[in-house]
Length: 321
Image (cartoon, rainbow, N blue to C red; front, side, top):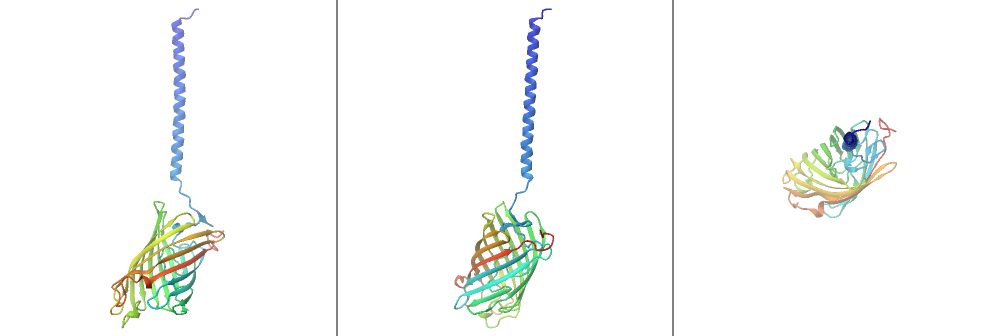
């Protein structure tokens, strides 16, 4: 039987239409699968945390990402050489050596002034400290304990207690409340400290005729730290303090404004070591000071510090390899 030409043309048209529809559907399925794959990859990239360099069991190499206390089982040794000005003839110089350990998680105890997130302390304070000038002597001994009670991906909070045993100056007892905000905008870390200090003496005793036997200090300090690389960092900081509260006549409620800049390099090997330098004034400005003390005494309050800290791996506890 002869087929109708119109039927053949219709059949061919239907076949071609079905073929195009099938190809279009396959292409749409491929595009949808590709889009789903891209969205899945983007989602996984967003959910995946940014990796940071770590030492041993996971202690951060980046100075700006360090916790406020050592990890359990870690030990730190530190030393610094400080040279600076003094109110009077000569130049101040000292060598301070100290150290710390974390006996349990979130607790650090030590005999040192190199607390993470703290504005640099004056020279002449350490477990072993020698003053070379202006008069040769031994410095004071600090004993501290710090407990980190709050920790998240973006902030760390702690409380510390510091005693300074006097072999050169005055006994003091300080309660501190440090806070560290980690790498804001993936750029800089903010350190903030509130300190309340009792001093068995008068900081400005040399400038007034009747110094007090007991004074108090209230200080707020802070710093910003930027890690240029995982191993190199810079820092700048300062603060404001109400010093000598209850001091002798002529030196009551002195306001001090310290300031410093610095930087360092972190070496990573069998140990983690920071080599650093700092320059600043303790303080840069003095307001409401005693007689014969100017507002800006930059020639008498400057200092330069060169130092190093060495961190071991966890020697005991849950992080020990």
